[in-house]
Length: 381
Ligand code: TXA
Ligand code: MG
Image (tube, rainbow, N blue to C red):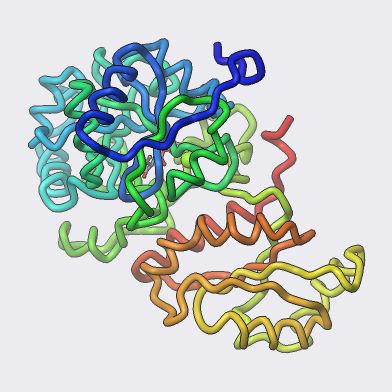
């Protein structure tokens, strides 16, 4: 496999011209893996039909093979029937009423940030699904991803293009810093417009109830509107919906994490008082008093918030805000990039405001912040 020292790989960031897309598509058909923009986050794409390409995706990311991949399909796919014809899903295992729900979701939200977990067909190698009987399928909305899938003429497996457990990339430069020494090509599609991964939905077994397995770029109320009923968001198991299958439960809790510890504040800064911070102040005692501390705010003016937090903690704060005007979609769009910006400041710790919003992309932001702040010892071994 790729030996970065021996092979001296340095990825090239390519403008998405038709020639470059054709060149990258050719590499995909030779089992290479490449950086691909999508509207959610950048993916590390490989031919979903090729076990060699799939193995490369896992090894390039250093991802454990028990964590399944999402298959990205062409906009030419119009229906479940079509997915079955492509030998990706097994229609026999989907009841008529389930089909109705799934077709509604496809009609309403594809192309877009929605992944559906469906019974798998034989055309999907077991490696892609980690041996599960189901497969995650999504149709990306980004024109460069669509062009690449069509040029390659095969579905593309693509996890986020970061090293395992790290912050997902939302620019071509971020892919370069994550995997630039391991892949040859990164197609540049600009900054991702959604900024968090797709919402993953499955059907509960033998039921017409849908289950949100990972909150993401599609807001729950949009789903509720399309389905005409409320969704039980608390049925989200862990972001992977796989707890029973993973040998050591909790192994995937830490995710999307910067290299230094990220600690969630008990409240948003505007509502904080000195009493709320007693515990945190004790934890900060091990950090030299003159070392600046990073802070990530959901919304508002970072200077004002840093001033307040700095006074409460008696520390110098280097703060970044996800959305000056407090807009949740904008906050989601900036989330991973701002985590990267704070990481680059190399403060010993990053404090982050918690997200309690249950509307729009609030649920997805809360999930990613929770995972970024989870202890990360387990999967690093
Ligand atoms: O927005 C996205 O979904 C991005 C872009 C690149 O498309 N992709 C992405 O892939 O987030 P990744 O590999 O970082 O996350 C894939 C997750 C798995 O960790 C697992 O939680 C879920 O999708 N998944 C995939 N197949 C599954 C299955 N058969 N059953 C349950 N969960 C599955
Ligand atoms: Mg990921």
